[in-house]
Image (tube, rainbow, N blue to C red; front, side, top):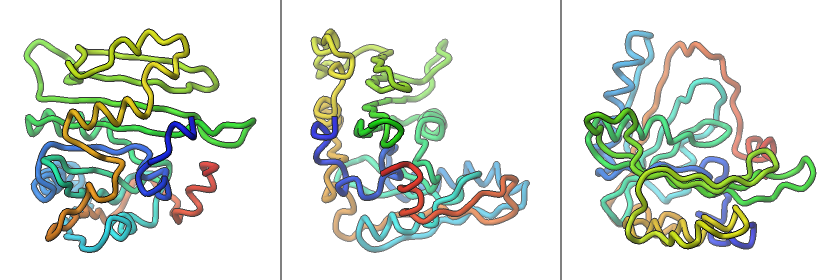
Length: 245
């Protein structure tokens, strides 16, 4: 699967931060301020401040504003504009971004589409390396009579040594549904298929020049205050070493 994943964003240098990313169908500043308003409602009663800060520079310079990475409560969230109506989302958790819960909620709150995109090469050899996974989640506004606002979800992942393939929701017209019958489960939803589906949705999320069009900036959500979970801080190198990257 490593060869199948040649072409990851920034050659995977920013994994685990970018191994999972979120995307909101909304402008970057608007998305960041809406997210800050939501978290302010949760954090202000606890004495935690939530700031929205513009971030200039290249994609890697913007990602560096997430450092140090932390365990415990997530303290920094980054919203990055793209050459499309979509805004990228990553955060500073030391094990990587966890986009599913916040973007599922943001899709409901703002009545927009949001995506969860996961691409992790399968490099496990013995007790070294990572379990591979390719996932796409599409979330939408809340639908009357439906508990979940997941529009479509696809995943091929190595679950503790065993490959699984899962899907829910109605397929999009552009999906290669015949591939879902492949003999090997890991071949039912590949990295190339993920990239193709994202292109149909208007994203080129693994290409560096897709991000930060000229004249734009990223937006950082910075939280400070008395966090209930005393987390440890990690450099990117420490987080990568701990994840055997």
